[in-house]
Image (tube, rainbow over all chains, first blue to last red; front, top):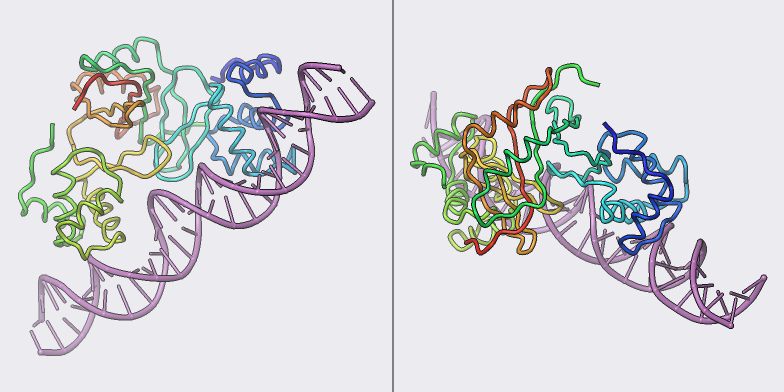
Length: 142
Length: 142
DNA sequence: AGAGCGAATTAGAACTATTCCAAATCCACG
DNA sequence: CGTGGATTTGGAATAGTTCTAATTCGCTCT
């Protein structure tokens, strides 16, 4: 499931919270991520954004993605060699990587599971976030 | 905990299993990984290996690491932008990434946990492996 | 409305990690 | 001991990302 859709004001506020401005470019980049939640690379985002805003540069796409990550509207996903991917789903979830197709699916995580996993940490370790990645095959999904 | 130390014969056999030869370079690279289990990058491995075998090339280090990954003596670890890291610990374990120091620690995983985590997968998903990454701070470790 | 000013954007250069390539070398087998 | 396939090597090439310097944008303060 997608995160709650942000109003333009809430979006601007999230940026303002960390001292950044809202800009048309940042809105469009965020819009593109929300529209199709498939963990695109920066390059893929660039291609999609250019359809709405043909003058945008790749450097700006990187800048916008970084801004969105900073203000916690987007998460970065790095589970293999190769380009970083971006994920606007903010609910607690794991990623399932289908090795046959290369597709990535979000797996919702019930509250309990993260606590159970967190419990394996020995004394002295304090985790701020937990990331879980499955690899395997997914039968006829999407 | 480290994986059980391989005998040279068992090491050669693992390679042979997938149709690769043993070579001095591959032994040295593996030895370096076993000696200091700190998730080095290919470059770091290269530096360490050169002390024992000054003529080795970086391309060969990449080749050897790839060979070791193929025959499952080493795991690749990719949890952030930047160079791939290599891990010779084959026991089921998670990784804890200390954001303050950049250090990575292995966290042993009791059997039950992986099963519990696996149970969150909806019908149709079949996971061959599960990777768990913690991020946070570790008090006075190592 | 206009000036000033820091933030954001842009294009392209630079950089890093990795892979590719072609030539030289090694090694197992007949 | 010669042949063939695998491996190693150094350098060139590539992919993804970050950096840089110049321009533009858009508040804020008159």
